[in-house]
Image (cartoon, rainbow over the protein chains, first blue to last red):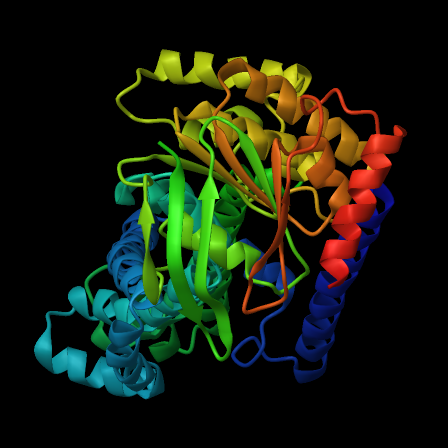
Amino acid sequence: MKNFITKKRTITAASILLMLVVWKVLAVIIDSPFIIPHPESTFLAVIKLCTQKGFLAAAGSTILRGLAGFLVSAVLGLFTGILAGISPGFNTFITPMLVAIRSVPVIALILLALIWFNTGTVPIFVAFLTMFPFICTNVSDGIKNVDPGLIEMARFYRVDKGRILTGVYIPAIMPFIISGASSAMGIGWRAIIIGEVLSQPEFGIGTNMQTAQTFLNVEAVIAWTLIAVLISFVFEKLIRWKEHSFTHWKTGS
Amino acid sequence: MSLQINNLGKSYNNPVFKDFSITFPEDAITCVLGPSGCGKTTLLNIIGGIIPPDEGSLTGFENKTFSYVFQEPRLLPWKTVTENIEFVLSRDLHAGERKKQAEKLIRQVKLEGYAGYYPAQLSGGMRQRVSIARAFAIPSDIILMDEPLKGLDVALKQNLIKWFLHIWKGDRRTVIFVTHDVDEALLLGDRIVVLSQAPAKIITQVEPEGPAGNRDSDSDLFKATKEKLIKALDK
């Protein structure tokens, strides 16, 4: 197992290294910082950005929007997902809505949201509509996968409904919730930043990207992108980090 | 008062029970022995109220409470041994009392060292022991058992029967145990009822000599009764 983890890390490192090498080679060949800046100068730009006044406001606003969108999606997704999983009728009722939300291009949602909401709310609304279907579908799939034998056992022993929900359904769907939350978060950050680029709220990573792009500051565009990737990575890790505490019973460790 | 089922009728695609009547003595272990697919599980599910009968009546079962030892242990994989037993205990009991009750049962099935283990960390036999402990943890009047020893090896079966009788002798509840295994029925049952293929009829009823748990499977009497039951099953 330890060998496998070491090997996995080496392969991951090799993959990242290859991307950096390709980037560097392209930067050398093209030789124009206005098209592709060098990786090292971009990393310096990231550090510069992080120490700049206004960085915390921009990154913090984006993170807060992400968390707000995620929280609303998680609460509503969990609620509707459980209902859809338990009731086939409700599942049939909600499926066309989920399909509709999923099928609408994100850009169309943003254009409409720009008309309906103020600039700070647009990214949250868009994030909600991209994250909610993921969480809802995963939760309802999880509920459908709960072993009916366990439910029958609990009902037979006259365990009340509340405890069947918290003692049987919720733990059984936890792996589904985590994988749904993880996919939703990954897509959610992208939606939020697109939303910010187009709606231009006062603070936000997307706002700064758009400004940098206007001044052809490619280095800053990529630097903000790297920061967005880092935020997404950190939240993904946070979700997965909690995963073990919900699924340790599989291995008992 | 005995527990009776009168003129039971139940069909799925084909009739499983048709005008079927049976009596279960209270405070004793009745083994219902029958071939696979003869409707044994259906009978237990009707008694336990999981499925309704199409026809017929059940008397003496009103206001009775049940425990069920299923064919698979049906333990919650995310709960430890103690938590699995506590899960079915009434919330009227304080948390401390629930824990005490669970620990008592765990001691009785000799799983003291495993109280904090998850089902995935236990062997098949140990899991079924937890399932038996759970059935005894609640103050039920009747324990329904659906081939809980199926698929376990002979030594393990005998061990589980020993544990089961050990706890059962503590409060002598009414047990209805269905199986297709003649040896299990002979080792456990105060009374053995042999059923035919569906639609089930009672072929014969036997009350083995001596108390369950003290029967010698090498004795001539045991072997003769076994022969008789096998013959009845073959009919």
